Image (cartoon, rainbow, N blue to C red; front, side, top):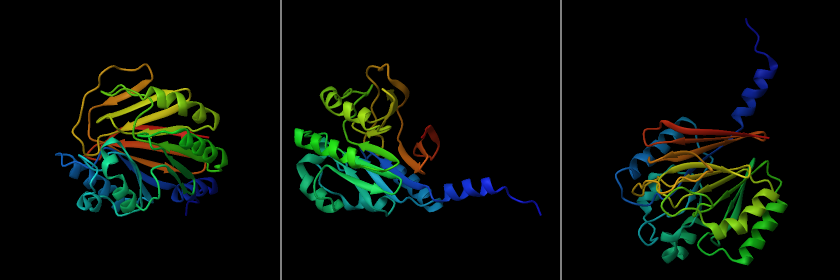
Length: 254
């Protein structure tokens, strides 16, 4: 019988203990592709279960009132939401639904710590919280999730004032990945050593790009969602369309 090298066994075991998260943005709308994206995510969840699901805001259109069947369509795992402009009018109801105390918080998930930023009202108090939380984190991977992207080639463009406030913290505390929504498309950008992914095609009606930014690497007008697979040494981010076809992939290593 052929022996399997011990190093191969080690890496197989390491992969088996990788955390697996899903990410969806701008998803709570009755568009033609909302249910298709939800179905694609469920198919992935059946094959290899997710440990949790992150949202990057605009959870329910048009004014944030929770629609339970949209939530029930998603894989039945713990949801950690960010909140967008469409969520503001019913923010209190969403906080209760998703069991979070305030619209900015952190979630520790073994190899990953997610810092959810409330981009609709980024106060100095929230900045102080974010800096303290990033400084205290011992997680192998620090990820910031928010609704409004810091960089974008889409209709709204990047949130400049927010970027000026947050970006120094991201570089100082070595945050390698920022997840955002708001633009109803898919884009991957890279700036100052940080990967920015805009995944706003989870359910809202798609929009084209406006002005391509020099930081932009990949742009697609497509329904989309993400999976994140994290070990202590590796973070793999894969973007899928509504047919579960890979539309982009980036691997981060220590």
